[in-house]
Image (cartoon, rainbow, N blue to C red):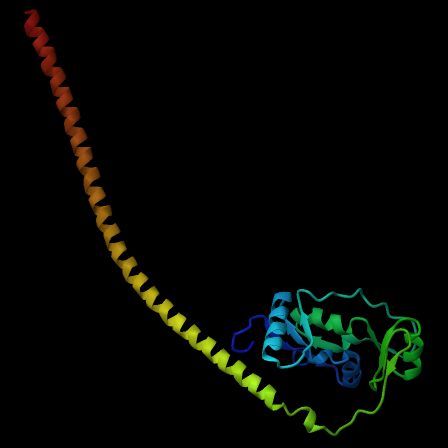
Length: 246
C-alpha cells in the first residue's frame, strides 16, 4: 500500500534499508531480536495509520519504527577491555535518514569476540552479542542455540482467511485508485476550463487597458482645452473692464 501511494511515509523494512558488514551478520541478526523486519516509517501519524490498517484487514502484527519518534540512546561508552569489536551500530551502513532507526535498535549493544567476554559485560549492565550470534541481555539473561537451516513451510503459508482479507484489501485499494483516477480527470477538465477562462479574461483586461489609455488621453486633452478657455475668459473680462472704464 505504501508503494502504490495509498499510505504515504512508508520507507520499507529495516533489513532492506541497511547493509551489514561482512562477518557480523549473525551478530546483527541476533542483536536485532526481530527488529530487522520492522517497518520504517516517517512519523507517528504514519505508524498509527499502518497499525489501524493491519487491524481492519486482520493481516497480523508488525514492528514499526517512526523515524521522527524514535528515541536516540546516549552514546554507548565502550569499556576498555580485550575482545570487544565495538558498538553494533558501527557495523551497519545506511542512508543518513535511516540512522535513527539503526540507533534505536542497535545503539545499546556491543559486539564481542566470545561468550566469556559477553557474559562478563552483561553482568555489568551491557547488552552484548558475540560474532557467532549469542545474545546476552544486560543483567544476565541470554539467548543462544542452533540456527536451523530447514524451513517449516506451514508457518509461512498464509491461511485462507488471510488470503481473503488480503484480496479484500487489494479490491479496496483498486477502488480507491480508480476513484483517484476519476478525481484527477475531473481536475484536469477543470484546469482546462480555467485556462480558457483565463485567456478570455486576459483579452478583456487588454481591451480595458487600451480603453483606459484612450480615456486618460481624452481627459488630458479636455483639461488643456479648459485651461485655454479659462485663459481666454480672463482676457475678455479685462477688456470688458477697460471698456466700462472708458
